Image (cartoon, rainbow, N blue to C red; front, side):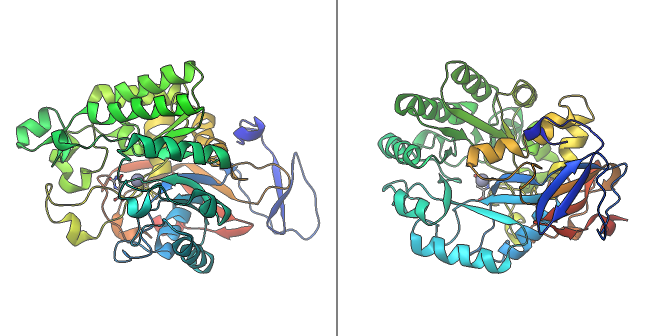
Length: 420
Ligand code: DOR
Ligand code: ZN
């Protein structure tokens, strides 16, 4: 399956030479090739996760570039985009160069780097966009925090447009009204007696950012869509021709806020798990193309941090090693998306949004390839994760479908055996 080339379930051979796709055709015959027998498996372009928190530099107790990219590899991702909310924040050429050097040394998948929108992500001063883009930034985002100042957001959009990179909105409206929130505002928050995050907190920001993108004729990408209202705002904006794209995460199309009662802090993330109606709307958004991308928001935290209890634990869950299986189990096998549509949202769509030459099996492309075993059944056991993070609500879930082999620039990795 290669959605970029409209290939859907054709039985083809694929030839790799020197880390590139050299040919893709029926019955390729060459001498002296190493052969991977992938019969019964599905070959797709290496998966791309455009929303990952790697934590290095500064929070290596949660994750490092090495463990985070090994986690990506095990999950079938050959390219990821790392967010900028590290310590220090990736807001200057100096920090960016240091991080890119570390990536060059330690990463086992392709890592693209986002830089922050504002200096120290404090929302007050726009970064030097020109310098950061020249030095390798592929997107800007204060992900983890909203940019509350609309003038700064507008200037950021204009600067991103100049360089043809997306501005990624962490769509959350934080002011006095909403301070101290923990989980979704609804029956569960009321029952537990804790402050809930209303859908309007997200939707107000989605609305503002769509408006700014419209006014400046620039590209806004809405991160982690979680509410029915956001899906509808994005749907209508797309119809009007606004350059808006959007992503959804497996937890937001799989779980409702009732999971908080069962999984505690491992079901605490931002934006939070919402209602049944919101989950259905996110799935509808994926189905009708309103939501372009499936990404993880892989947000590793240490066990002692998540053990602080629902109120004090940090927001976020790991996602790289369960994403593909959740997509197959919850969307494809339940008839919500075809495998082709799902793969499109994890390959060529994020590649187009980030303007990166990835996400396709075209001849000449880097041989980044994921080979999927759709029938493989496994039980989620975080102690076997490559990630340092064990913070997942999907512990003991029985899922179907796993990457059997992941190939990065022609180099072959096999992880699935560790589940046997
Ligand atoms: O749950 C989240 N965790 N949401 C974010 O926006 C940030 C992330 C993190 O960095 O831990
Ligand atoms: Zn994030």
